[in-house]
Image 1 (cartoon, rainbow, N blue to C red):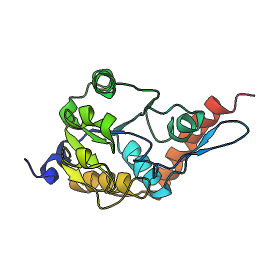
Image 2 (image 1 turned 90 degrees about the vertical axis):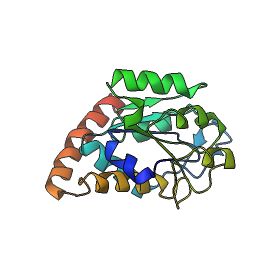
Image 3 (image 1 turned 90 degrees about the horizontal axis):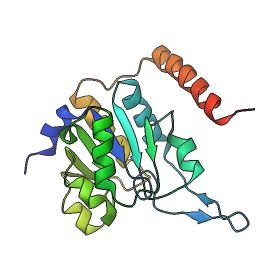
Image 4 (image 1 turned 180 degrees about the horizontal axis):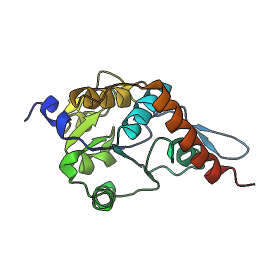
Length: 191
């Protein structure tokens, strides 16, 4: 197996599962509404923003279905949010085609059994430290961080550093945030 650090330089896009990767896997079901509440890591979010600003394509591929997932990630942290995915491999392949990517150019982060088909075909298979054993066995890289506690930031930081893109120009970041926030508010605050 190739050392995963060699693969870092070929990555042009990232795709992520949500529960157990961008969250710690805990879900609170609100008793009156049935809404599902998740918590996300701000450092993972900043890593995603830096990747987005640096020209990488980002996607969410999740079996979950929630307005909160969509509102957390689109359009500020991901170009696409694909929910209620039962079979992730064909959805991943469609994502690659839509964005003119080879699967070998995409890092995918998953933590549980439904992620294995994508982990087997992507360019860099990654999982958090608390992923199930079957997932760990097919991954190129197991982050030292658990899901929802920095594993996404860990991967993104390594890719950007390997490609010489791990920097933050504060004024460019502020301008990007203003533009993307306008788009976000246009989508979600229609009044």
